[in-house]
Length: 136
Image 1 (cartoon, one colour):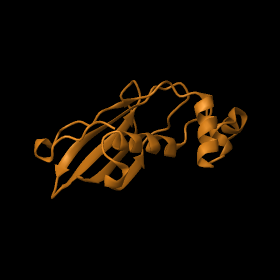
Image 2 (tube, one colour):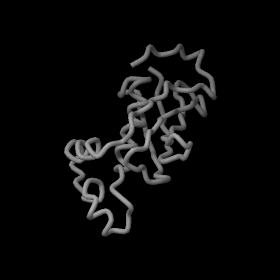
Image 3 (tube, helix red, strand yellow):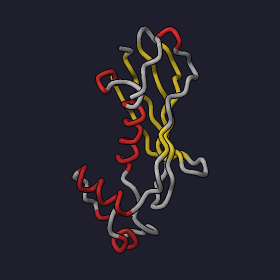
């Protein structure tokens, strides 16, 4: 976690430290299955994914949500997170490089509202979200 900025220095528009991830691999998906307990075969079995009309397996949406949570916990203690809401926008494919970012959109009474997103290298938003952070 980075040192917290001073409350008075926080401004609407300030960016949170970004998180850039390596290309998504089948191993990443298999490990996430084990860690999350989400063993839906559409995420790890290519034959199953094709039989469901998909070109290949794809990442769990909640894996992207976990990356957004990591952006937050790299910035503030987990105990400061009051809410995290996400909206799935597009499927994240094997091989894509995902970047996660956040920006302060509102400064309240000792709280900040943050907009978050994951995007691929083409700038396509895969997941967007919003968090409310209580400033410690």
